[in-house]
Length: 167
Image 1 (cartoon, rainbow, N blue to C red):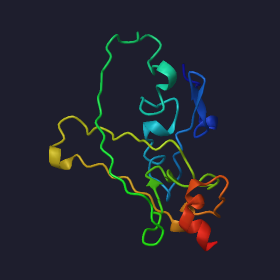
Image 2 (cartoon, rainbow, N blue to C red):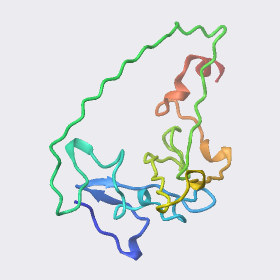
Image 3 (tube, one colour):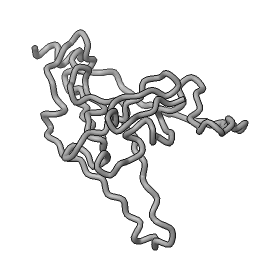
Image 4 (cartoon, rainbow, N blue to C red):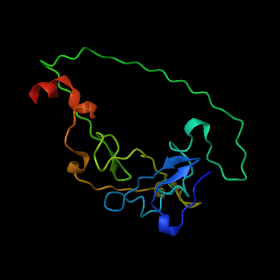
């Protein structure tokens, strides 16, 4: 079940089956998604994705039954590593910005953080030639929007040995 939104509450967080949902779409210039009325920005228009199926929840209309089909997926991972040597290695600094206008990979405490990082690519009108089916989304931000003071007790990026030696 989804909480319904009225125009007065559009853009505010809602819930899917009691689980908080916040599309996290920011206004221009941080993202075009709100302006484009992308379904993932609002709980009332969200059609499903990464935020819909927590603990076996299915996002369906009221008259729909849960389908019986279940997919089985297998992954194979291979990791290569070497022991960290601070004499010649430096920790990588991770920066990540999501198209919905927020820092999707940054340290805790950044006011521009978000966790909902998906969006829907709208379908082209029927009969549109393939070469004309182009969807454009833009996001403009400053690198400083991805930064905040480092806290070694809460931010894993701040606790690496090289950083600790230099501070």
